Image (cartoon, rainbow, N blue to C red; front, side, top):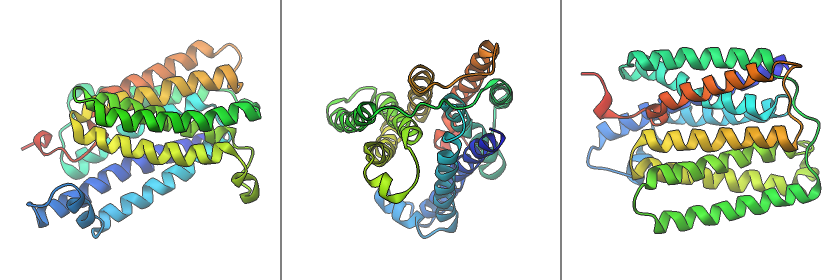
Length: 282
């Protein structure tokens, strides 16, 4: 379990740092060609080393998440991933000179305390990995959620940011559940597993929905909705269907740690996209 905690924290640190590195690359691209927007800025950013480093860190973070999910309850891993916003906030304050308010520093502390409490109270991940019907249902759910997201993106005109952010979060939650239900990482077995394709579908569409959400309105509302979507229901699913547990008698403590971590992450939701020029300190 100790190694799983290390992987979960590594995922949080690499993911949070990646956000800031990608923001640096995007800023450099925007300064080079201020008249360029959208895809043009993205293509320019791909030529900047901070952005490339950020993408690499994201890949390392995902690998660490996979390993953590094999040894820890889902609720611990998802809380750790939400804590990446605390890493982003601190890194943004140091690198991008974004000023943190007192309540945001308090939120960083809350996230750290919550994760510590979770680490002390969580038991091992459950031994259940779902039957064939549940694995197939996960694949169907990922396809259905992808369709819902694409239709929502075309139909919804008001409150697009939180709605698409929530759908992105639900997709990322499906990724965590699907990874957990994988019986192993052997290539022949993976190709025959419905959950393998659920990971791919939900991972790609979730990322697309999140980008759309961040471009549609408030970064804070989009990120907050994503955090709620990707943490709460996978945690409940892991306990109810996959046998995730806490240490004996420490369930209330685990709930407290989970709530502290998620509440702190929500307070830091504006750092879901680190590059926010209007909030940079003068």
